Image (cartoon, rainbow, N blue to C red; front, side):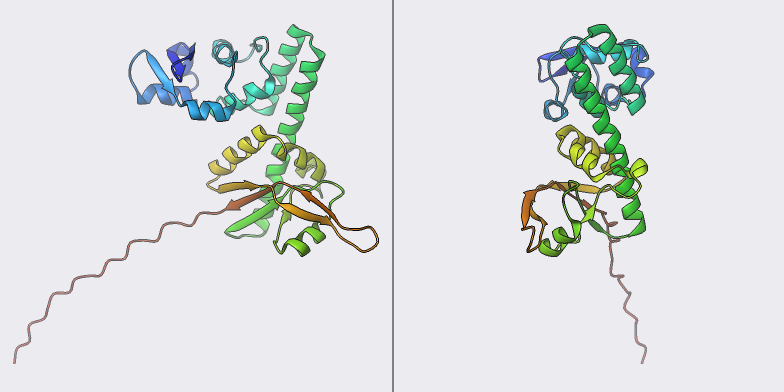
Length: 256
């Protein structure tokens, strides 16, 4: 089966391989259309970070998901974003194994460092999601504003001066929820923010990222400190109200 993006970038995946990945976007596209060529959404591809070499990487994945390596000039972070978009269901362990195999073939120290940075941020993302889920579960509401602070920031000052009840992501049980610093680092990464959105949306939530200018630390002696920080606003959608219909009552006949 041939897949095309914007009439140019193309790659091929055998139908027998597609059937083994029933949950992938490619399988869904194949089921919903006919013909030998399937068109993929170019806007979604751009958002996922589609670029040179990624078509070959997808082909290699479907040929041998357990033992493939990335083609030259393809970053692990780029493939991770495309894997999220195509719903290839690669967890952190699978991505780490892929990085190890690719690094062994390339022997490129700089590439390995970039891959390790990506894996660290994905791991921190998982802990940050656990933190947000715990905060939402312990304080049920229809709206949340999560702020991603650095270790030098003061949540009390942020909330006092902004007038917004922000919830800080990270801290406390670091093994479970990660540090504020680690969570702030993955929030700075656009691909991690998109992955976070995709997961929260699968949970049925609506998301919106902002980067306001906040007072991060206040005080007379040490002076006031300002800076930009990422804020994730999460809304719990409410069910649609049932349609109310006014029953039509038959007129009663009055017998005198």
